[in-house]
Image (cartoon, rainbow, N blue to C red; front, side, top):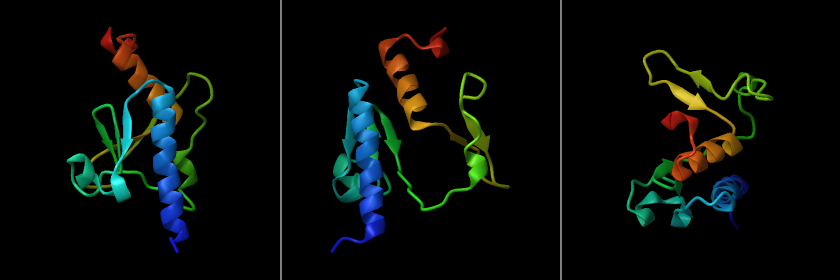
Length: 111
């Protein structure tokens, strides 16, 4: 029987793909969560447009990674561990919207 953590991870991968496709983006889940099936390294779980994604679902994530995203005050969080690369964190729906705008040429980033 499949381990519950594997099921939860697969569910997140399918969520990313389904929400991306609903927004009109191309999205694929790597077979068996192994990016080699998509032509990438084994750590790639999902491909949305040309963006490779490694999906990580945890029972508990640090609360400070979830600031108040309501309204237009904050779009994302950037964090960095000492001597490591900075990471950006944003709600999936907001990221999908941004990707859709870039694809459609309606992004404010292009102007």
